[in-house]
Length: 113
Length: 118
Image (cartoon, rainbow over all chains, first blue to last red; front, side, top):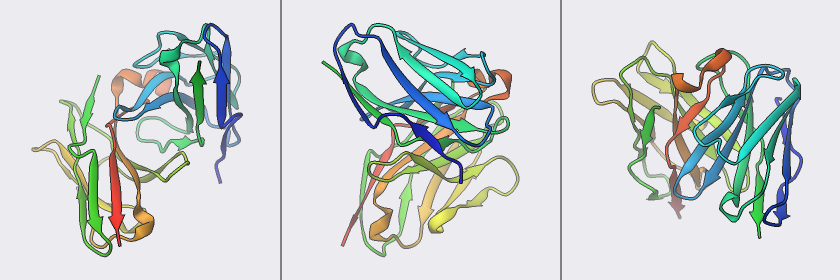
């Protein structure tokens, strides 16, 4: 079974802190994604990566950056956390191009106070 | 970017009754469509997808969906629901805007919460 593991289920951070959300997948997938899930808004794509060191902006990249130094790991970075970044963050990975199934982690619920 | 509209935020239905969850998309190009399900406190998992071919797609757990190009719809159906089907259901479309490098970033609808009543 494909496993996508997010390092924390719950995080509480202070406004202005630099926050790292980590995601690891164990199936050698080339594509990895970060989504943000908010009630009534569904999931929105923040960033994605199709190879090591490659990254592309999604729908809502402002206030976020990403890092992919190894194929299995994709990190989401909040440079200076703000309260409007309080949300559920979901990492996903996939193998192949358009139409490929995405495998999701269980999510990290981040609260910025 | 593409857009996906899920017309109902909540759908209550009695156990063993049929259900339809509605999804419309906006696209003038060939589309790949998906339904994902999210059970409480879990990530999303794929129910089914349409890439090409037969417009009736069968998925896991007895769900099916019909692709209708003229109505730009991809409604999800199940003939008889069970209490374990209580979950959030998301319709999504593969968005060419987010396909750099061969990846497949998805645009999701806002979700439909399926509530099964005993």
